[in-house]
Image 1 (cartoon, rainbow, N blue to C red):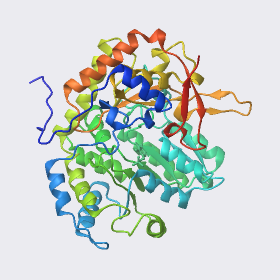
Image 2: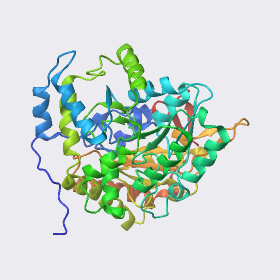
Image 3: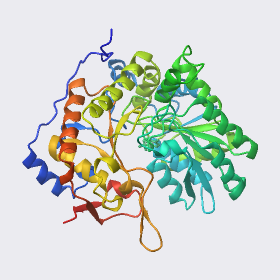
Image 4: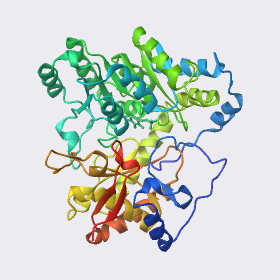
Length: 457
Ligand SMILES: *Cc1c(COP(=O)(O)O)cnc(C)c1O
C-alpha cells in the first residue's frame, strides 16, 4: 500500500478555533506582532513548536492515573529511570522538569567565564544557558548543513576537522564538554550520522573532552540512520539509539519531544562526581532526585512514551507526515529547507522574501502573514532568534533565515497539513507585498520569546 496512514485512531477530540482575517489582524497588533504573545484560543493550527504539544496515547493517560505521587522513591520514577537507562545506558539519570532545567544544571557546573562549549548547532535555550554563565557557545555544523537548498542525508553532522582545529587553537582545558544536537533542531531538524558521532567522539577522546548529546529527538535521528546510513537497515531503531548513546559520556534531554509527553527532561551521565553535584543543584532548585520538578504521574507517562517513540510504524508515520508537508509545499513552488527533517518543515525565508534584508527579519514577517492568512502559528528561526550586533551596531545574521512549522506529534491530520500548506502557498504567491519588521523592545537573553515588533513603514 502506498497511502501513509496515521497508525492510531482518535478517541478524544479537542475543538480548534476558527477566526476571521479581521480578527487576526487585530490580534496580531495586540500581540505586539510577536506570535509568542498570541493566545492559543485564537490559533487554528499551532505549529509554533513540537515541544510538549504531543497527543498522549490511551496507555499514557491510563498511566497518569496509576502514577505514584510519593515524594521520595516513587514507583513511577523507577519506571522512568529504567526506560531511560534501557535506551541510553547511562549510569546516572537526573530528572528535570524540562530540557532547559537540565541544561541550566549542567552548565552551572561546567560553564563559566573563559569556558567554550562547541556543538553542531546550539539550540536557543542551550546557547542561552551557556551564555548566561558567561561561557561561550560555538557551532561547528558542516558547510552543507548551512545551505538550505542543498540536499544531503546528514546535514546535522559536525565538521570534525574544524572542531579539532578549534580545540588545538583554544586549548582543551577551556572546553569542559562538547555537545551534539540530535537531530539538529536549529539547522532544520537534520540528522547526524552514526559515523559522525563516532568520529566526533574519537577527536574528543584524544583531548579528554566529554561528549554530551542534546538528545531531544534521538528516536527521529535513529530512524533517519536506519533509512539512510549503510549497515543500519536491519537494526531496530532501539539498537541504533543505544549505539548512538554508547559513544556519548552523557546527555541532556527535553523529554517534551521524543518522550512523547507534555513535560519532562533529564541529564544522563556516567560521571559519578558530576552526577552528585547535579543532584545537589537539583534538590536546591528543581526538586528531590526522584522527581526533579515533575509530578510523578508525568514520569509514568514518560516511561511509556519512551517505549512508544521507538515503534517503527510510529516513526514511519512521523517522518512521513513531515515529508508529505514538505512535498506539498514544493509542489506549490515554496522554497523550503531540503530535505525535510524529523519534526518540522522550515521555509527558506531568504528565497521566500528576497526583498527583505536579514536585519528586517524576513522570517518573522512571513510567520506573521501566515497567521494573518490562515490562523496558523509558526516560529522564526533566523535573525530574530540568533542575530546579533557587532561593535559598530551592524547586524550579524545567522547562516540561515528560516520559518519553522513544527509538527506536534500525533496531533494533526492530513487535512490540517494540507490546509497549512495552502495558506503558506497563498502567502508565497503574494510575497512581494511582505513588509520588513523592526524590534521596538527586547530583553537581554532569548529575545524572540518576548520581543515586541512593528512593521517598517
Ligand atoms: C526543546 C529543546 C531544548 C530545550 O528544552 P525545553 O524542554 O524546551 O526546555 C534543548 N535543545 C533542543 C535541541 C531542543 O529542541
